[in-house]
Length: 184
Image 1: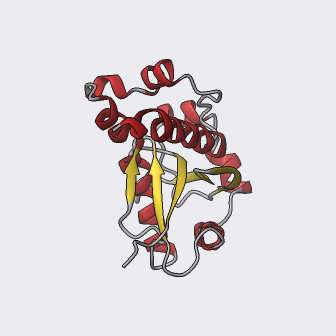
Image 2: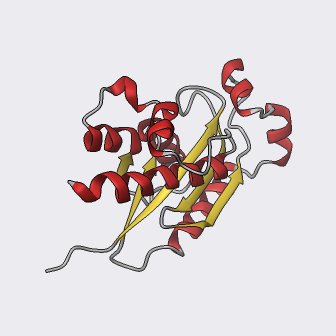
């Protein structure tokens, strides 16, 4: 019996604060890890007015602006789900890939369940920081993006714009996969 094909999808989110439900998912960026030009992005209308000023400062997003131009959360998550469906055939597994995946996955999982009833990723999430730590046997403090970039020398850099960050994360993942994991 063969294992189902795994489709790695780099996902990055920008939010209004640290936890889903209490704070809002404001934007999603995603791309196929091995085909990063195949990407998806959407801005999401906040579910409430609550925000952490530092979170908005980092993203450069405005609650007022995103409230006006963002998609309703149900429509945004349906669009994301529809895009994900174009990546995988029946029987293939979508694997959520993130840089600090627990944070991004928690918002995506919450929003999928709340607004569509199911998460196309299921419970699959792969954290790039943990992958790097395992591949290099470094300390957790050495998994900061600046330290990883210093070591792997990616062409892209993080910008706090969800799609571009998803593409950057995809590049980091590919460099770990190609340069570090191949020797294990």
